[in-house]
Image (cartoon, rainbow, N blue to C red; front, side, top):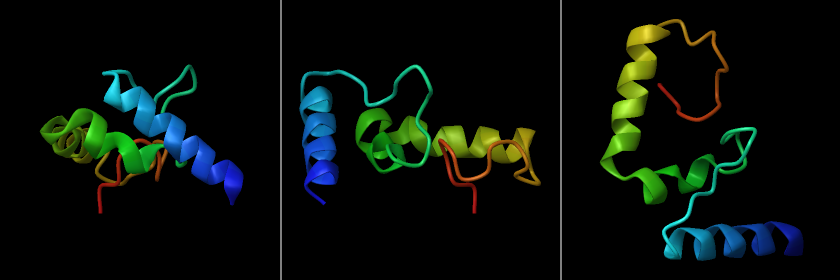
Length: 68
């Protein structure tokens, strides 16, 4: 639990400095919760694009954006 809190704190500090929570392997499931904070309204647009391109949600389901 302490490790998860530390990771959350580090992510929030990075965002407060205008940084990003993504890394060389993308967002995945661990950092998805920070995407609205990082990307704002653009995050909803990402989900719209994902639905249009992948309506059956077969490409990396549950990563980066949820389209449900």
